Image 1 (cartoon, one colour):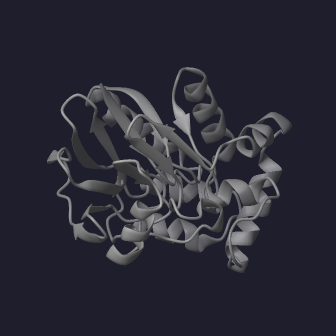
Image 2: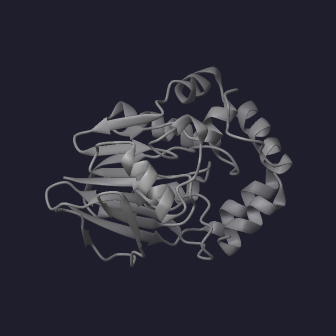
Length: 247
């Protein structure tokens, strides 16, 4: 069975549809959403409804900091003024049922030897980033799960550890990586809805349970349309510019 992994959708309908199509074409039978369904983008209601429908069909979704902020929770630290404006706008677009769905999302989900979490395993509610080998090692030390899948960082990354030391591995899109054996792994698929590695293509990944292999994907999509919708909604233009540049 292959599991499709999507993080940081950020209310980007076009990117979400493109990634889901690519993952299903790759044979994914289930989807896992690693948080931040909303924020920044122009289609929060559509994305929440889509993910809610998938969860009803067996998908997994966890809470992200933008999701928490949109329903009045703690989004982690002080957000920039533009981000706060987008969160306020997002909250107004969601109905009571959509608010309730986001508010009920768990911070983490354990499934067999896998942990799904938005930020990290040591304090998921604090929203600290896993952006270095040191923070990856800290996250891996906080769980006995062999595989951790998380989001929050908008760039694809893979870390592996033996004992207390973690090492970074730069994945090549489309090339399966064996993640079996004695090592423990932390994988960040990258952002579906707002990539920040100077590549505007949406990011996602799949994990094959039977072969213990993982592949990172980059999926071109109509980012110009998604950016135009951000501008048309009156959201900060910087969020539209980011989609065009992948930054």
